[in-house]
Each structure stands twice: as C-alpha cells, then as structure tokens.
Amino acid sequence: MDIVYIRDLCVDTIIGIFDWEREVRQTVSLDLEMATDIRRAAATDDIQYALNYKAVAKRLIAFIEGSEFLLVERLAEEVAAIVIDEFNVPWLRLRLSKPGALRGARDVGLIIERGERPDA
Image (cartoon, rainbow, N blue to C red; front, side, top):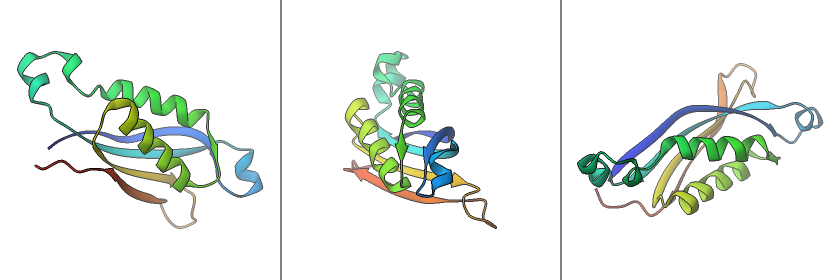
C-alpha cells in the first residue's frame, strides 16, 4: 500500500454548536492519508494513473467552505465519504482539527480511519 497525503489543509467554515459559532467562520485543518497504488503512475509518468491530490483538495475546500455542520464528527464522516466515493480511495486516515477551539490547547479534533486497508 502506498500513501498519498495532504497535510494541514486549512479551510474556513461554519462549525460548532454555540450561537456565536453559527455566525463566525472558523478554520478547520485537515491531514489526510489516502491509500493508493502509485506503481502505474510512476512507470508511465502520467497523471491519469495517479491520485490527483490537487483535485482532492479543491473538492474538499469547496465542500467544507459551503458546509454548516454542528459537529466535527459529522464533517469528518462527510469528508471521508467524498474521498472514498469520488476518488476511488479504498482506505483513508483523516485528522480534522479546530485550531484555537479550546483555551490552552493549540487545537482539538479527531482522527478517523475509513474503508478497507489494503495489504501492504
């Protein structure tokens, strides 16, 4: 199994349960590890055989900017479903955080894994 990753993708969105959070856009940060097989892309040097991380990032930015979820748990599940369903990724690990959401902590969030992890 090979991994294509995106680290610290920052997107502003409406997220949270408090009244003020429903009125102010907050930044969420994503770290995404996506299982893929890079051998054909490497052998051909052709983007059509690669997992296009720019396309993934653009899709997620557009989705997250347009969303208004209460919980990071819901946002994480929706992001995972998009990547798995639309980009043919069999397995992913997603770290989603809200920087500055908790006084005294740099960030808070969650880590999820979804899909079937291919054999190495």
